[in-house]
Amino acid sequence: MNVTLEQARALAAFHAAGTLQGAAKALHRTHTAVLYALKQLETQTGLDLFDRSGYRTRLTPAGDEVLRRCRSLLEAERSLVETCRELKSGWEPVLTVVFDAILPLGPTLEVVQALRDAGAPTRLRLTVDSLGGVEDRFVADDAQVLISVLPVRLEGLTVISLPRLRARLVAHRSHPLSKLRTVSRADLAQHVLLTVRGSDPRLQLSTAQLDEQSHVHLSDFHAKKAAILAGIGFGWLPDWLIEREVKNGELKPLTLPQGSVHAFEPRLAHRGRLGPAGRLFLERLTGRPSANRG
Image 1 (spheres, helix red, strand yellow):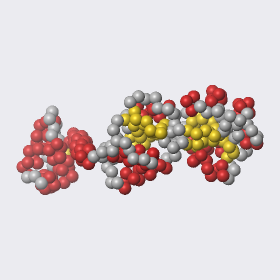
Image 2 (cartoon, one colour):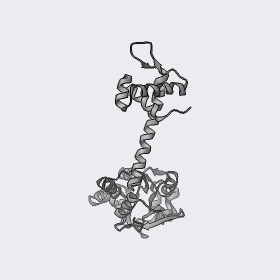
Image 3 (cartoon, helix red, strand yellow):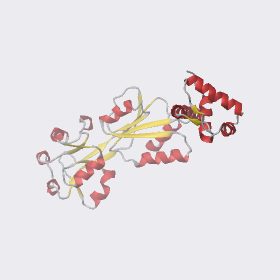
Image 4 (cartoon, helix red, strand yellow):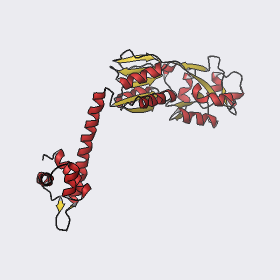
């Protein structure tokens, strides 16, 4: 079978116009040319696509199904034409970015707005995961950029350090731990440590030895914050997420002898040479020009 785009366009135009004359006008073709294309389509498919028994020619059920497939064929053609146009413009058709859930979304949304302001045709795909799941998702999605608070293990990537991100060990003001001036490891062991996706020894958290007894793993940091506010347990939360609650006393930072503030060191890593959208993303997050311009 060798169904052509011309035949698919003729069938779609016939259905939209309702007549051969209307289809010919829409396609800027002659009546004969459209009729020939439709007859060839019937020959190619080996199906009766038209019901000619009434006053007006209509599609048969088989014709309706072939029309649906022809529309998919025409949509694929449109998508290919659009992709070629985007490639000629120099912009990436798609930029896929995976980043850790502990990072604030604001800077990334600023990049989205900057791409819109620049008239970029690039489709930006953002995926959020946590800890080791960031690299796993990066590979699974065949992404171009990842941002992680863990050291990057994947080989062959360009890695750039980002500004540090602080997190604090906190509990709700009604939680028993909040009543203590200094909290020992023994005190912590009596309560529920809340984590997102568990923890990772590469983080070197002062609560690492308590991770095994944590039976509450949350899907993201907003869920973790809600659980801490509900008094279910204690845990690490980034400063950007709890600034208001700490200020009004709803959340209390816990004071540990070994330290209750942790500075994460996020890293941005990317594959190969970035296109214009990737470079803009990099420049906005790092605050410095990309090394691979042009």
